[in-house]
Image 1: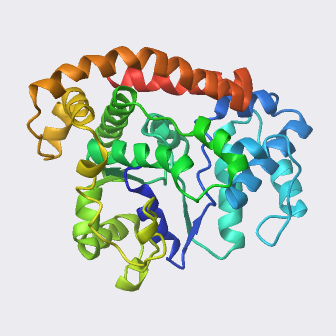
Image 2: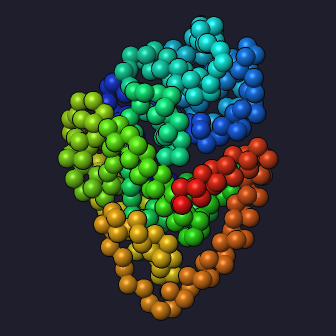
Image 3: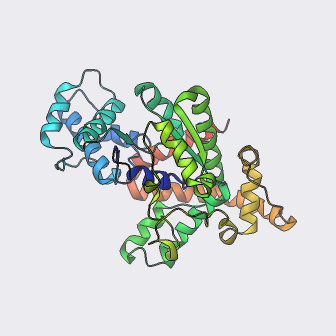
Length: 341
C-alpha cells in the first residue's frame, strides 16, 4: 500500500542471487478468481492451466490478464518444465504449493538462490505454515505519506502525460482514494503485520520507510543480513519510483518525500488520518500535527462520504472484473476488518 516496498524490491532486484517478479503477483488476493478459473486441481487441464498462469504472472506480471491464457515459453520456464511439474505433484493439491513450486523452478532456471514476492500480511500466516523457509519483511510508512502518494497517483491519471488517453478511464477505476477507507486499510495492514511478527518473531523483520531513506546503508545492511544475503552499497543504485516528473529519471535513494504529504493533503484529510490512526502512529513515532477546529469538524464530512465512496469502489471493481473480482475484493476487505479488532 505505497509503504515503500517498491524501493525494497528495486534494491533486492540488484542482488545477483535474487529472482524478482514483474509487478505484483497478487496470488492470494485474487485466489477466489484463480480457483474459479482452475477449480479442480485433480484435473490435468486445470492443473497445467494453473501452473501456466503462475509461471506467466511470475515473469510478465498482470495477474488478471494471465487467467486462462496459454503458457508463454522462454528460457526461464518451458513446456518441459510445465509437464514435469504437473506429473510430480502429490494429491490432494494445494494452490499455495503450486505457486511456490513454480517460483522455485523459475528461480533455479535463472541461476538464482532466493525469490521474493509482495503479499498482504493477512496471508502471511498461510505462507508461513506452507513454506517453512519463508522470511517476511514488513515496511511501515507514515500513513499521511501513504495516502498522499495514493492521492497523487489518482490525480496524475488525468493531469500528467504518463498515461495515454485510451487507458486513463480504466486506470481511474483501478486506483481508488479516500481518507477514511485508506487510513483504515493502513491500520489493518500494520496490525496484521504485527500479529505475524508476534507469532513468527525469528522469521520477521520490520523497518520504516523513513529510516530506509534516511540511512539506507545501515537499514538495508540489517535487512540483507536477516535475509541471509550479502550486501554492498552498489545495490543501492536504484531508479526512483515517483509520481513527480522531476524525479522519475533520477538514480539513488532520497529522503525528499518524507514530509511531502504536507504539500498534497488538505488539513481535513490530515485530521481524518490522525484521528483514525493515532494509536499506531504513536507506536511508530510519527508526530501528530495540531489540527484546526475547522479541520476537525470536516472529519465528519469525510466519514459521511466514505459510504458512497465504497459503493463506487465496488462498482468500479465490477466493471473491471465482474462478480468474481468483486468477491475477491470483498474477501480482502473482510480480512482488513478482522485485523482491526
